[in-house]
Amino acid sequence: MKTLQYVHWQHETMWLGYLVEFPDYWTQGETREDLEENLKDLYQELASGRIPEVRQVAELRIA
Image 1 (cartoon, helix red, strand yellow):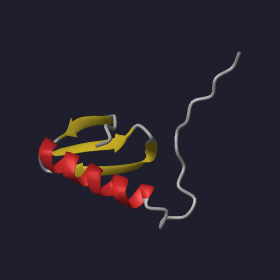
Image 2 (cartoon, helix red, strand yellow):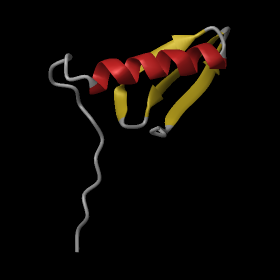
Image 3 (spheres, helix red, strand yellow):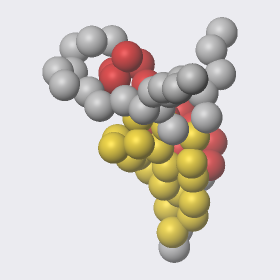
Image 4 (spheres, helix red, strand yellow):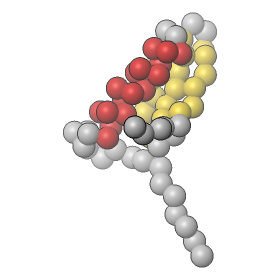
């Protein structure tokens, strides 16, 4: 099992959010639970390699 961080907020009647690892790809849901399911689906698509040129966030250590 993998744990992912996500950012979310409510705008009017919808919940919006994105995965911290993939900040350019947003999704939404009518409830927070719907949003979380959509984020899981989005992660599967982005991590599958089927979508070309997916931008990600990474860490760089500098000594």
